[in-house]
Figure 1 (cartoon, rainbow, N blue to C red):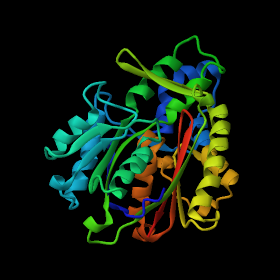
Figure 2 (figure 1 turned 120 degrees about the vertical axis):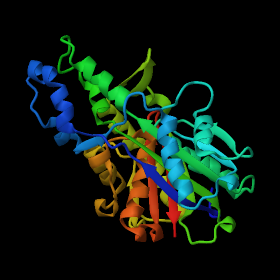
Figure 3 (figure 1 turned 90 degrees about the vertical axis):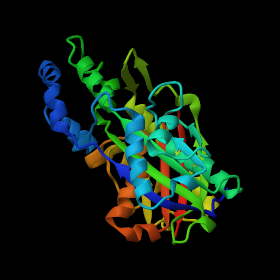
Amino acid sequence: MSLSNVVIEGMAYSLPQKIYTSADIENQLSPLYEKLNLPLGRLALMTGIEERRLWPNDFKPSEASSEAGIKLLKSGIKGNEVDLLVHCAVCRDRLEPATASYVHRRMELGGSTQILDISNACLGFLNALVLVGSMIETGQIRRAILVSGENGAPLVQKTIQLLNENSQTRKSIKPFFANLTIGAGAVAWSIAHRDSVLKECPTLGYWTTETDTSHNELCEGDTSGDELIMQTDSEELLHAGISVAERAWAKFLHVNDWTPEIPELVITHQVGKAHSKAVFEALSINPSISYSSFEKLGNCGSVSLPITYTLACEANPQNLLRKTALLGIGSGLSSLMLSINP
């Protein structure tokens, strides 16, 4: 389906002030590194992640999302004209009520704004773009704000604690390695019907999806009391993810009537350098047209892809005028790809 009447009206983001380098993480893991004789510097070398930002452990997802949402409103988006607010993160304040309700209150949106959460691992924001964009395309609503706030601090700290236990071996630490790449951040976008916006804005285009749930055990996260824990088979997840992405990419090129050479900007989910390299090679994409944020932000879950596009447009406003491919993927596994046109 094409979302040819849906534009990105505005974008904003928020980042924690506290920076943790990969060296900082390794210093906290000194008992493990000494026990297993692991070389310092391997975390940055293997992932390409030099640093990530983290909020305090008790900083709620709604607080992060609200920071980005309030910045968005200050850019000129009128809160009383927002028909729908969606919170799209993996992290949520609690099971009930919807985290969107806390964001709505902090942003001081009106009583006519519908609220809800959409969650699908790292793909949640892109899922929301398609679902809410379809509502705008069909005339059900005119404007929506999508927010996502992720804070990986509890997961990172719990992982460091587990890895420093004396029982760990080189084999047993592998499922926890991906946790050390996790960062924090928040993003907010306003999308609207083009007739509701007076300025020129990027327009959403065609989207495609590919799902293979036979691999849904390769990355699983859950709560343990008040703590977060996640285990990932990184190697198998990479192979399975590339296979799903290849099938989604073939569909994507077909519905957009594109070749791999047509996109002028490509944004992928920000996992690390190995994942990015494998994706570009498998899809025959020139890496020079991509923009990445994982080097400084790590993997911020559902925030990663939209904040990277936001940062790309902030760094070079000409990117707002470029044919763009957003290539999302989330554990489960599912890939969703969406084009953006000038």
